[in-house]
Image (spheres, helix red, strand yellow):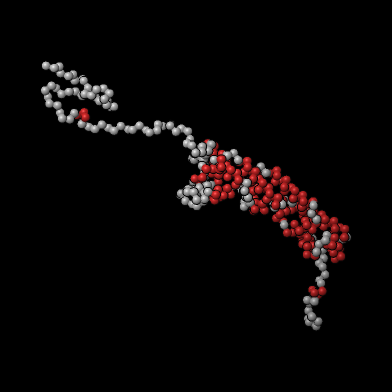
Length: 319
């Protein structure tokens, strides 16, 4: 009689299946084996497939995709940031350039585009997003914002060009407006306080003071009496802007007192008033406005009425 097989002999040779199976004991000799082995009655659990690309395979940036901005330029959420950024409440599809061109601007051709637009600035940097949006009109997405453009400028290290252009714009307009901060701010579409802050940001305090001092000196030292009087009577806001309104009034009063002392003695007669007026080369209307400005109108006699004024009285025989 053959020797019965041992119960510890595995049904399948080792290594036949990829998954290990527990040894299956054989039924006792003489017993009928079941039609289905209980250990194999249940299907095997599916194994999780291995990932196609293991984690960390693509640790370097893909070709054609610009590197992200430096950490200092990335927006921070949940805390204070030097660059304020308020996300839109809803996603709006608008016409014009898009944030899809943001990656293109990091390329060398993007640097050239930005540098060219900087040289075309007429007021300030707020013009750049609109010009870029118009240049890349038709691409899908949300239009570029000023924050996006500033990141690109800092990435390409051309911030000095932007500051130089804005400085040139401010100084050119300040010269054109003869040192007036109010008029310059109006031309640059900002209020005077914003202009002063911009001048400080650009480091133009000394240059601004130099330009304004030039026009102050011109008004006080190089203009005639009539020109200074015209400024005092018609451009008081300009003199106040230059902070020389008092100096101009003082110079006018000094010259007026010199002429009064030269042509009058004691009480001012009509002849003396006329002599003062002619010495200052003023017509009657401007002379009266000068006297009124300094509160001297009552001290000078009024001119005699002309012939036309004499005929305006009652006619002969009328009571």
